[in-house]
Length: 290
Ligand code: C2E
Ligand code: MG
Ligand code: MG
Ligand code: MG
Image 1 (cartoon, rainbow, N blue to C red):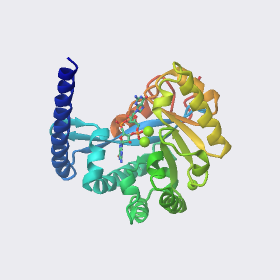
Image 2 (image 1 turned 90 degrees about the horizontal axis):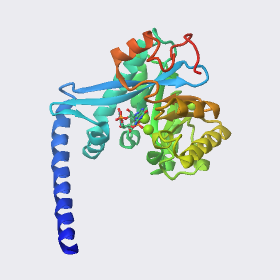
Image 3 (image 1 turned 180 degrees about the vertical axis):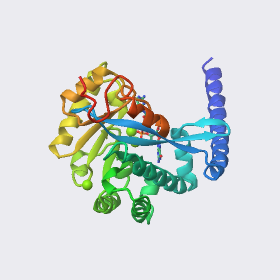
């Protein structure tokens, strides 16, 4: 009986592996054509200042409308990283996000657009020059651009990361550590980096009201970040209770389905002009959270 069960598991495992390898190479093939065919789009998710309820930024999140349907970035970014396709994708994301940031300054003055960086692109030799070229080309002031790097990407080689982060800081762009709490970095290392913001990983935030450990970790991250002079944004805020917990503990910003899902650019503008979804009045001057 045990033997049968073992064999069944084994062949299932093999099939899954084969499927994944096939799927990866199919995605790679489609990915090569996607830039040329203009199949990528940036969605934007509002970032809210918890003290005032104002919209202060938006995170740009890539979407791929492939000929075989929508493919999640969690699925194709790792493949793009392995095949070198990530660099042209990063260039496209940077240019598109900055063009949008420039355009939106007239509607929402000072709005900051956050861009996700793959560790691969971040460590590219001419990456910092590229960022400064894009800023120049799009005429966006550096403080309106935020670059998100994951904690894991930084800790993979923190000396090199430190050097790159310092050069980016000199450009005047904002730096945020994404998915904070998932890696194993110590806050004393992070203290050395010129980062402006920690983004608490959504896995802690999403269960704040059910899991006392997650609540304790979230509260600890907020107070430690504040002790070292760093702002905090909580991602994955889905419930009013989460928002209130974070606000009470002085977490500066929040982002999540409670406020709004990531949206195409036109929808984002409409959402702003309508004063948000009704869960929060996010546009400056429209009121405060309570
Ligand atoms: P991330 O940067 O941590 O982005 C947050 C993810 O959480 C997004 O998923 C967003 O849609 C989702 N999210 C936001 N609010 C909530 C919420 O309240 N509840 C839940 N359950 N989820 C929420 P998405 O858009 O699928 O992106 C997944 C990941 O793909 C991102 O994680 C980021 O690591 C990567 N990614 C997205 N766009 C880009 C890009 O342009 N370049 C690179 N290199 N990576 C990207
Ligand atoms: Mg992010
Ligand atoms: Mg700075
Ligand atoms: Mg994240």
